[in-house]
Amino acid sequence: ATPTALLTGTGRGAQLGILIRGPQVLEDTRTVDTIVLDKTGTVTTGTMAVVDVVALAAVPAPDLLRLAGAVESASEHPIAQAVARHAGGPLPETRAFSSAPGGGVRGEVDGVVVTVGRADWLERHGIRTSEAQATRFTAAEDAGRTAIWVAVGDDVAGLITLSDTVKDGSAAAIARLRRLGLRPVLLTGDNRAVALQVAAAVGIDAADVRAGVSPEGKVDAVRELQAGGATVAMAGDGVNDAAALAQADLGIAMGSGTDVAIEAADLTVMGNSLEQVAQAIELSRRTLRTIK
Ligand code: ADP
Ligand code: MG
Image (cartoon, rainbow, N blue to C red; front, side):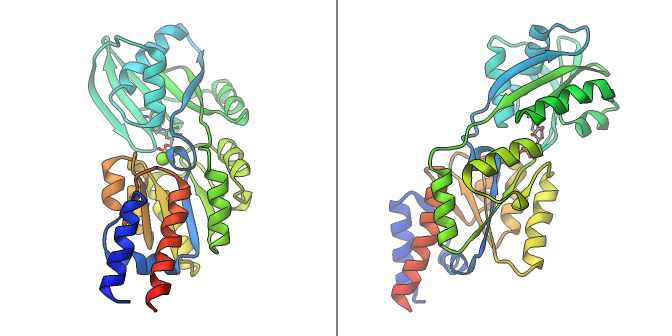
């Protein structure tokens, strides 16, 4: 490949809103045979909506929402943005904020410590969920919702359920990626029921769904595919995707994604669509074909 031809491809990419880190990236896209897709914000819009706020103890639902909203307003996760928006404003200040990508958030609001997120994030802070509470949680997940725990102090106060929407064009783009010879794999920190629903909606095989995966688990998933002989592209947008994007043979970030994801990626699609991801792969193959 001559450098001039590759740079032409890069220029065309820019016209299409595809920012490519360097000419070598186009070489890499030629050989990818597997595309790992993050769910939230990549296959789906990433604008989640609160469906239900369920109080499971003494704290009434509106208070629970307000406390959770206050802590979540310090996070940029799609779940956090939905909860903060739903809580409305003005929200009380949060002190001593901490968070774990793919885990949850925690902070002090109105003199109480509020912990929001996955069960393992709560457990890390010594908060246990009872069997009866877990049954409620699982029921929400089985209904295809994303569910998060809310704890006030050392006790579970309730849960919040959310919905997410598949992006227009995701299904068509995945069909196009398949025609390019790529096997799509869905990878998410969210629960399995939600992941399977999204996979069915966009044409990803149930066998190629990896759910409940931590950010480190995402790296392992990419590594496993590579160890199996695959050349892996990965598309993602979150802090939780950054390490996996770096591990992939070709990392693709959504333009609306977090800075760490964009920094870790080889290529960024400014329009945030999977159509553009397919376009990027087509473009690079065309560019290389004309110069061979
Ligand atoms: P995804 O892979 O779908 O982008 P993440 O890895 O970011 O998901 O998150 C995985 C899970 O961790 C979420 O489904 C949620 O249960 C929990 N989580 C992550 N961030 C937050 C947050 N800010 N508030 C509450 N829960 C969170
Ligand atoms: Mg995401």
